[in-house]
Image (spheres, one colour):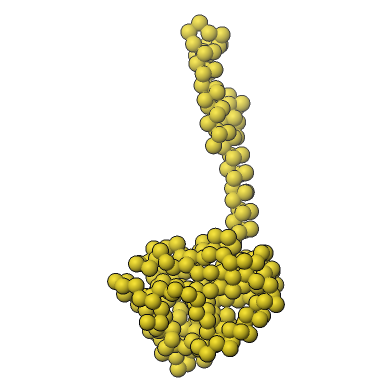
Length: 257
């Protein structure tokens, strides 16, 4: 903007002084066109649009959330709920509530949907913001290059528990991640359609919950629950799921109550 504004403020007093009554400016009552002025007036804005448009195009492609960041990414399925996040690890066969465990240095592909109203998923230190909507799937790719705990949260207002809806993203070495998966599998809790239906009720979570296993195809079933007439594949056979979002935001119970 300064390249447009500064010349104007510099040129205005010069023109007023030069072409004042008695000034040294040449009086040309029949002047009507100048190629030099036309090139200056139109050339600078066009050049600016080309430069800014090129930069925008390059950065749009660079930061495309769907762009894979490397081969063999870790796939995590994310279901946004009121007021918590459910993370499913289809390759490892485990699931968590409000804890996203990731291996350091490995590309990660997050597949996101919502089991309720639209929500906004964001991990400020690791990944940008992206919306998750019921009955739809979106995607976000990230790569954590440092170990530690990072806070993620929902940035889209969704009722009384909005202010408390955050989760921990725990980045660890690949060996530590493998050990965490094995330890999680020993957990007695298993997540099935009935367990998901209970999580679907609006509630807050005071600490992360681990599931040693979950019903295969649960993520796809969550999406299909918003269209009851949608054909269901073999992975969804026999799974009774609530249809549509369950919105009861007049209280803030804790998850599991």
